[in-house]
Image (cartoon, rainbow, N blue to C red; front, side, top):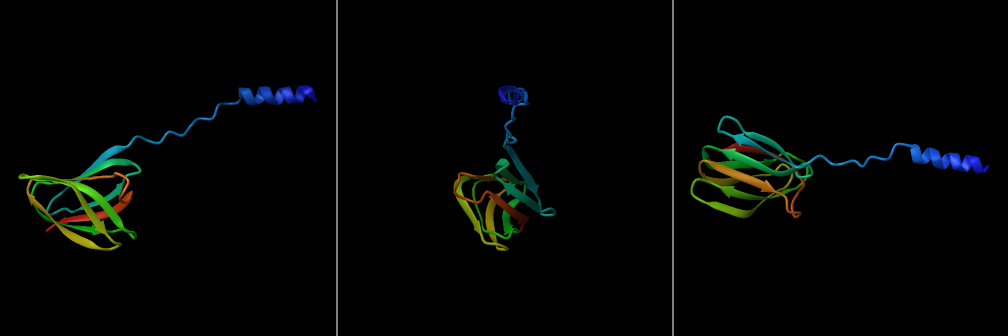
Length: 127
């Protein structure tokens, strides 16, 4: 009996150690929007550190929530004349809103600070 207990201990010690699952590193993602080509984006802060939307034209853009849950995102907006941070985009399922981007070129950077949605499906069109 004693040898069987020792054999089990030795077998357990020689077994391959458990490997911890390391999550993939967070990345920066984004897309470029134009009048001819909208940006269809899945923003996922479980996998992304930030998401940047750029446009050379500026003007106004329509942001539409293509998902089936509320989408609340914090963003900063930089255009040819100014920069503003701490803005919030809050859209219910299938809702949309227009945002004045200002003169181009324009950059809209979405970030996650724990208060908004971790995952959003957005369609952004130039107006």
